[in-house]
Image (cartoon, rainbow, N blue to C red; front, top):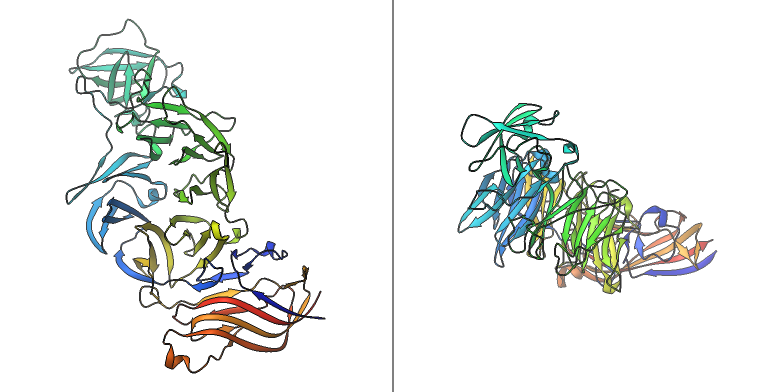
Amino acid sequence: MADFIKTQNSFAYGEVAPEFFARDDIRGVSFLENMDVLAGGGLTRRRGTVSVATAWGATRLIPFSVQEDENYLLVLSSTNIGVYSNGVRIKSILAPWSKEDLGRLQYAQRFGTIIFVHPDYQPQTLSKNGNEFNLRPFGFARNDADMTLNMPFMRFDDSEGITITISTASGNNFANLTTNQSFWTAESVGSRLEINGKQWIINSYESPTNVVAYTNGTYSLPSGPVSDWRESAFSNRRGWPCSITFHQDRLVFGGSKTWPSGVWMSQVGRHTNFNMGTGLDDEAIFITLLSQQRQQICTVVSSENLQILTTVGEWAISNKPLTPSAVDIKQHTSVGSVASRYLPPQKIEGATVFISASQKDIRELSLDELGENYNANDLCAFSKHLMNNPVDVAYNDKTRQLFVVMADGAMAVLNQNSALGISAWGRYKTSGQFKAVAVMDGETYVIVERGDAFLIEKFADGALKDAGQYNFSFRASALPMYASGHSVSRIRLRKISARILNTKTIFINGERVTLPDRIYETNAAGFSGDVSINCLGTQYDCMSASWTVHSDEQLPATILSVTINGRYTV
């Protein structure tokens, strides 16, 4: 056996998965709970939370920043939007979505307005005017001259070969629209058609080959069946936009239930006008992603370029400015995103971070050094075991932390600082289950289910418990022992030392460490310095953690380094 002294003073990789235990170049731990990795590489107990408010059956948490000093939290539950200000519920708004729909609800904000989209519902606009909050259906711009709407129209695949015969019906401006084969459904009611330069609104469903529609003003009967006609891109029958963003002063819709690979962009500065007109630079744009694989757009992201994340890959439109005649679209990577739930991509250090379709990867979409091609680097390559069906995600650029809420109520947290080489994952647990997370004005808010209650809380400096009353412990365990570049088969430990800050009670390998008595007289925050335990030659196998440090104390404990001393056999 050979003597050794081994010190670990950097935990920059955080908790790593067991498949990487055979590597000796990873500065991490085998287990990390309720601790963060500091910029200098040390470990510190996570911040506690403070109570903000009580919610009811909440499943989504959305920040709504109207202006710099006016921020609101939107708490979405079944058929309801709760508006919170400074911990007080100031407004309750009825909404059309059910609890099951909320997972796919996407949104984009501009000034005092936020637009929600869902493939099964007409988009909804929430706006704040004065002291009033109003939720109303999104409306396309109307032409005053003929009352037509500037919405996108298109020809769907199942309408190919369908002709429409127009005949008069009772009532002013009403007509029968008869197709040459079965085509209409009850969901067609309310849809708009564009026939011979006029817009028609379907008023009633009569049969699979006949509906009654009306138009504004008089109309002339065509001499025969019409083959050149189009439907509104969005309707109850065809579905509604799946995703949304603002890019280069255009409102962008990505994908729909019936046209999953379509991208619709409004006119510049006129976000409700989707009239493509004659193709002038500021007029609306429509494109379809073309590839050998069928794909659905999961979300659209405004960054340096317009990024389009689909179920099978990542696309980007790089034109500046973006005009109908100049659309340079390209698929850059083939990772794919989650379609069954909206997990909002996050901006981290200039990159777009998204959860992959496998829900085991968190990818960082960033341009290469030439600014021409995107790469999708894996941010959790060493910690995939922590990814367990993510349901929500948010990034706090003030604390440099990415929070990922899991379906089981745990939360994985990434402490990220590329300049200092920190990319450390760990896990947060609390008394109850984390359900949602959002970041607003530098503060990280969570919804926690405790018993039968849903509580809004936020992480706060100086908070030593959760919600002011729930204790939580912390724990860190070493990786398996390596020495001289070799795996160690047996270790006989003599001594374990830790350099700590602000600690009164700490356990090393299950043994309570006796701290100097003077700390209770001179430093109410706890002891800072070196502590150790003598192991009396305790023997460990090759895969066991050589040390575990943990404590139940409610102090901001920090571990700067851990040193082990003993003998090993290769």
